[in-house]
Image 1 (tube, helix red, strand yellow):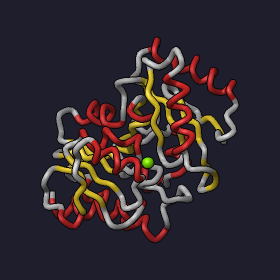
Image 2 (tube, rainbow, N blue to C red):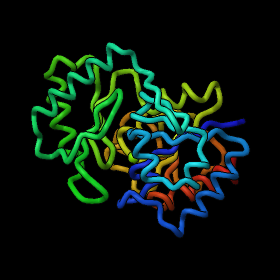
Image 3 (cartoon, rainbow, N blue to C red):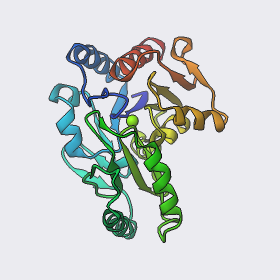
Image 4 (cartoon, protein in one colour):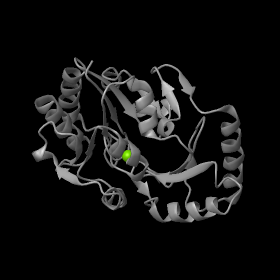
Amino acid sequence: MRFCIGIDLHGTLLDKEWKIKAELEQKLIQTLQHLKNFSKIYICSGNDLVFVNQYLSEEVRACFDGYILETGCVISDKKHEKAIVQNEVIKKIKDLEIFLKNKQHKEVKYFARRLATISMFTQHEGKGDDPKSFFEKIKKEIAESRWANDVYVTHSDVAVDIIPRCHNKFTGLFNIAKGLPTIGIADSLNDLHLLKDAEYGFIPGNASPILLYTLNNQGKQIYSLKNFNGQKGIYQSKCDHTQGVVEILQSLKEKL
Ligand SMILES: [Mg+2]
């Protein structure tokens, strides 16, 4: 094995309706199967095992070695979930979740099932609000709470997530990679570490402006995928979502 690849779901592998279009699925499967010959490939998501099983077909799931779930806090062999966060931290998260549920924020469509994090969805299958302004509100609320030193707030393109400090998608992927160079493919602010700390970062065309802004602000340059020649760095595809992932995987196949 030469690489360990982590691919995000919402806003990356899945389109706006949380689907992989039928006409793209076979192309995606073929490319993943080829990369599997020399890479470990993981889903790297803020979601849980139930979600992965619900939104990815059996054929697509078969292309992956396992899943890094709940923004790097849970590892799955595709059958079971194992939280890699300390029990006392999980207890604090559960107290915070009750606190937030009692607030009854109107922006929240639902709290998703989580073992070690909190996910407040503002969207469901393309309907609902962008989580960006709710993210700012929650960030302020947490900063003023007794949990301020225990967690950080981030968001995908569908939900505001609260994550125990020191955990992120990159730490989850790094844990699994066992020394292999890492490759992150993702679109949102909750993927920041996955993109900037991995050896290679790839972003679909639809990436969130706040992610691009934050990467730039931290001195990271984003190159066009068409200039990718096997050099380490962060690259953005022309196409969006699944089509963008296929474009990125094809480049990996040709250039690595
Ligand atoms: Mg995403």
